[in-house]
Length: 110
Image 1 (cartoon, rainbow, N blue to C red):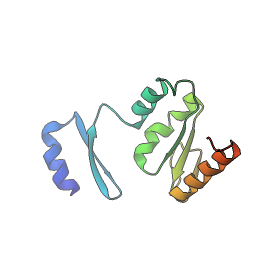
Image 2: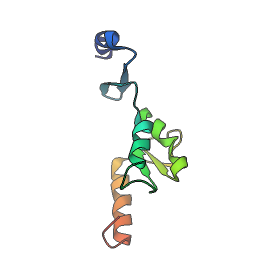
Image 3: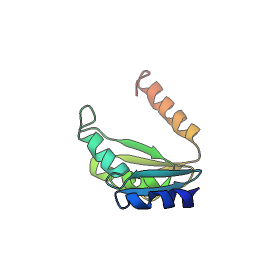
């Protein structure tokens, strides 16, 4: 599948790139990644000035993880330890349980 997608993508390079992760093949704009998206989000109300908590499970998250310290943020990798993450959890359910505990400590609102 990745080989066929790469072949079809050739006429559109370098504006678009191919990402192969886990069980997917993704075509995306080369102009944006999770770092650029995170920066744009954190520059916009209501996120401006807030401390981001970013969770992810594939190598594309590393772009965002490396940016988080600029904003006092926290990166959590899921499934395995990734560069730039403050810590890792074993599975998505661990993130859901963590968020539920935070919400319960704050009277039901996180």
